[in-house]
Image (cartoon, rainbow, N blue to C red; front, side, top):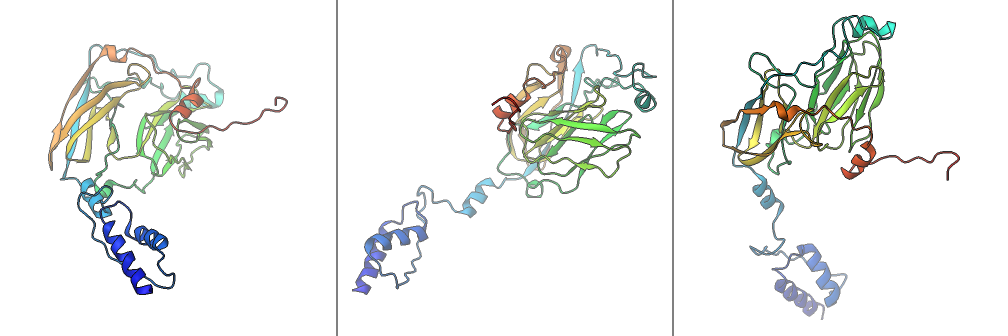
Length: 331
């Protein structure tokens, strides 16, 4: 009787080959309902039917994600028109500053870095060129965030760099080269705030960890020196870069094929601050695709906006979290 029950199980399993159930689960269910004896172990090997729904194996998934090759996207972003002139944020001598800050913050004028254009070639600095979405076929050596810490510095009461692009999970250290303290404060939407006092001449640094990618660059300020402002942009992929002082950018290791990029600038139009949205670029294997971009003065008409008022609401909309506390005396 036991033998016939086992054979009956085998026959039923054979009829289920085209289904999307895993083999081990199919054997368990069929034996349970068919009355297979508990003491008897039945081992059945099934060959996946091609084209069956859900039949793709891990190897097949990896094959789909594997790129045909990789290439590079590069170019120069320039400003068209007369470049506006902005007064320094802190003038030489530091009128109105605290005495302890004057020697450091006003030894040199602190420039307004919201629009930095190279006079030689009209190259636009601090624009961020980034892939719209994380691709499935990232080059293997770029698939994980770098383990080397990137450093975010403070010198002369300015942040360096003004725009920092990194990957979520990549170590970040906030350091300072100033002989006075700073209170560095990030304003993320998806990550917890970083709000730390950075001691004078701290070259060891305080870790600032972004576990989640942000949808756009986030503001960084110093609560002790309110003119100080910069931006951090943690992403979930390596395909993003800020333009250099000449407006140049290069993104390497892109999977071959068609991609869409966005270009962000802190004086860009609207709430998104995007100079360009869904820019289509085709990457060829082992080749460098070059595209130079030019933006007129009208694109930069708006002054940078602070996210202070709606940061909690925007964080919730963007998939982040906020901490709610109960105030004493109000229930």
